[in-house]
Amino acid sequence: MGRRPARCYRYQKNKPYPKSRFCRGVPDPKIRIFDCGKKRLPCNEFSACVHLVSDEKEQVSSEGLEAARVNANKTMIKMAGKDFFHLRIRVHPYHVLRINKMLTCAGADRLQTGMRGAWGKAGGTAARISIGQVLMSIRTREDKIDAAIEAFRRSKFKIPGRQKIHVSSRWGFTRFAKEDYERWSATGRMKEDGVGCKWMAGHGPLSRFMRNVIKAPGDRPQ
Image (cartoon, rainbow, N blue to C red; front, side, top):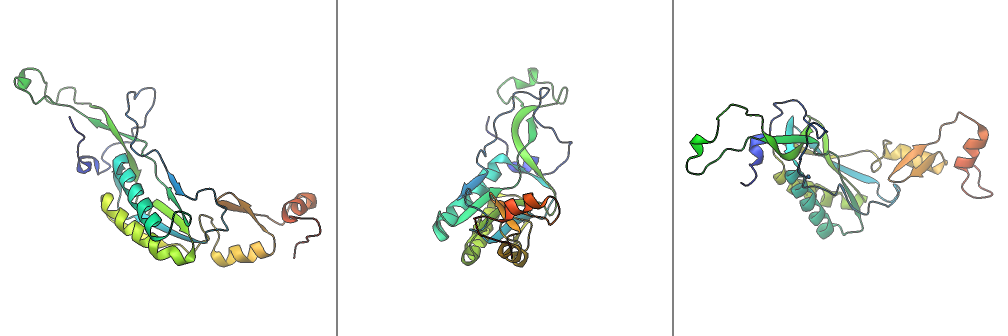
């Protein structure tokens, strides 16, 4: 028996049903990669960020997330180049989908029990999405924003419901606005931390502040 179409599991009708010691035998989700592109580059390399935001309360299957990821990744490689973006999937398919398999062969009416004992078996996984929740994000250069918008426009066809494409005013995947990031970086108050960054507060021991702010001998905070 093949998998059911996603329209059978689109709406959030039931409670969350995650994989646990009580819910066993769950098949692996189709999506296994949640970061694509140059995911190890520090945050100062990519200043622009584009989000794909859900406009509906729904469930998105792991197959749909994988199809959207592949589509966005291929489009960015083609239009922007494989070294000029970092794509991240922001939702995870933790919700287990159930299916009550019914026999369709000859004489099946003698074997199946209809709606008696209709609690199905695990047949797949899906992510539970809220209105305004970010599905996917791309950080890239300022001149590659149009490529990211086109990548998400094509990815929308792989996901049910309505989505909106939002160009962020913040620096990459950080929580700081672009002008604030540039201002605090120039004064040494912003410290890189992988794809994110840390803002060095002005309180605490002076030795710790000087150790974090001063990068090389002879440097002094402005």
